[in-house]
Length: 86
Image (cartoon, rainbow, N blue to C red; front, side, top):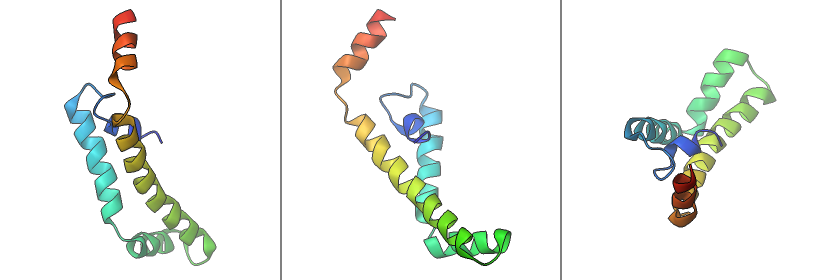
């Protein structure tokens, strides 16, 4: 997930970028699936496509937060070694 890398605190050096990425993930997870579905129905129309898009978008928020937390739990020693080598 591309948004999970800037949301991880040990990878991102800029605190502002981390807070924006975390805010996007939190904001996306806060929206209920039904509201996202209604938004996609208004944009695309009726059918299975808006439902699939709503579920995919809700999964992005959930998995992005999960991966960001998993990246933060990584052992810092290999990251420090890569930083020391250049």
